[in-house]
Image (spheres, rainbow, N blue to C red):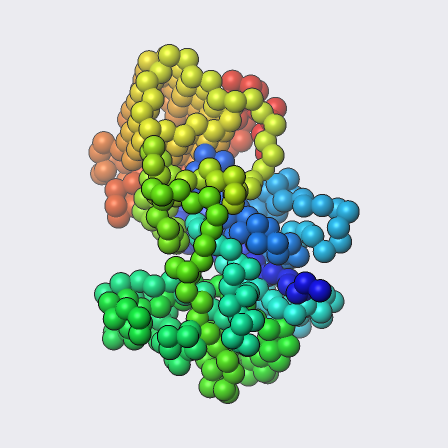
Length: 417
């Protein structure tokens, strides 16, 4: 009989360092690439790993995420254990919102009891990666572990910025180190250390007992409280090496061990470069391990005499004559008018960039109209008076107001989601 596994996806992230992209949405709901949202990556990994009993725990500014899940993530109403369900704070044990990762799961412990699973996986919702989570579960079972933590080998000099795991060669964890000055090196590679990815596999009974103990002690977080307590009490905690995870269909030119935290504007902007080019570092096209998203029913993109060099065009986007687009991503139902120049830009859904505008290193959030002959990205001081400019010099135009004209994409906005 197959193992019973349920998943909790922590999707309540406020994403304050991604402002203004998170002004009206949570971090997991932020768009990525030409058609995805950040949450699509963890959900695709779970579904592809045959883990399909999924609870998405939401909190901050969750409406955009709720709408996306409703439209994009209906798995099968015929199979009762295959679903993605959004769960806001239920306040079953008081009148407070989720106070931390462990508290969020504890507030929904009734769902664990209802399904009576063998294992519970707890994953974050805002990273870009592919992972066969079943391989991590198999690792957990082979070692008779109580908890397994996904760990990413990072250079020793970079490990000071992470929560570091000190572990034996077989993965057995000795200690946790939070942003240590002298991180413990891997036994197999003295130049690297294990950084926790914040993704966990728990044996269900151990998790329930640990949550009850932490609740009584007033502790709310897995990384800071629950896991150190379990380690100190003699439980079997192991680190799973993410670098050992094998994904079918990965192309020779891709980075084999790919995981990105897009926690701020510069990281978000730079990660988009990884999906561009003839041989992208992270190729979104992989029929053996697809990244799922909304089943958008609009038409394909149209290009009307423009010059395009290294770009992704979303569905129903329109690019007019004499536009020049390079190293950029245009999402769906966006309109790029005549004589527009876009260099290293991200243009989100339902945006119209009007005739003669010149933009460089700019992110334009949804529902915007960029007036004719607008220039953004060439004068940091001038841009910073109107928009948000990141430390790396990326200018972000915040989301505008929804309107037929802004959403139209040449099609009247009839397909918008």
